[in-house]
Length: 321
Ligand SMILES: Nc1nc2c(c(=O)[nH]1)N[C@H]1C(S)=C(S)[C@@H](COP(=O)(O)O)O[C@H]1N2
Ligand SMILES: [Mo]
Image (tube, rainbow, N blue to C red; front, side, top):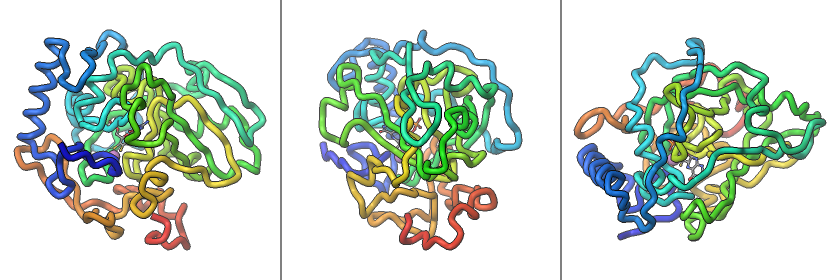
């Protein structure tokens, strides 16, 4: 099998130009289902996904921030994932994350803020009622999905820590638990996974801290118990299973930029006019949309140009990709 390490989002054995065809995808799903039924994943460890860990949430749909596009199925969203901590293949996160324990959970907040320390996950999200937002996730690999996320605006969560005027960026870190995350025992990426936003991006009303989807808590493969969602950026900015939030003065390093700096920048804004060095970003394939998928034009900032273009006024978006 051809392993391509430095490409967020692609299945390990499929070329970007042929992004998973629906039939391949369906076959993978059948394999995965069979594997789950027998408890044998074929990927190594025979871990089964503990669906019982997912519980119902009460969330009010926020129509202002929701797309009217029909969401992908729960099954699509929870079996076609990128979470390299559990393996490179799209099916690996669902198959290999059953041993991961998302509760109890704490998040350490540090850096340029008045209120720092270690906080229970439940307290972190307390400042705002849980709401549901339907966003499109556009992977840098030129496919997309529509996902109803449940969570709180990132700004509401961050403001309670009272970041100071020195806080120019916010850095996030994923948990490091090689015992529970088999991918972390290899070197596909530098662990732990890290990401960051400029403070004004983090405080933008579209930035979201998801704790669930489809009215249920996040399954492990989608980043339990909390993950970032920035809908105008490529999916890899959406860091999963966050354990640290650091308010910084300087632009923090980000995992994909460390892996392949000429391919993945800090900003990672969805931009159909800036090609990836190895493929076009002009179009995207909608997952679950028929045998050969429908390819649709990719929109500037994933359709949120009106909302976010002002954040980047005066910047050369080919330079700051
Ligand atoms: N910690 C961590 N977060 C991650 C990733 C990862 O490998 N590790 N993959 C990213 C990529 S490339 C994408 S496209 C999205 C996928 O989110 P989903 O599986 O919930 O659709 O998660 C992002 N967050
Ligand atoms: Mo991705």
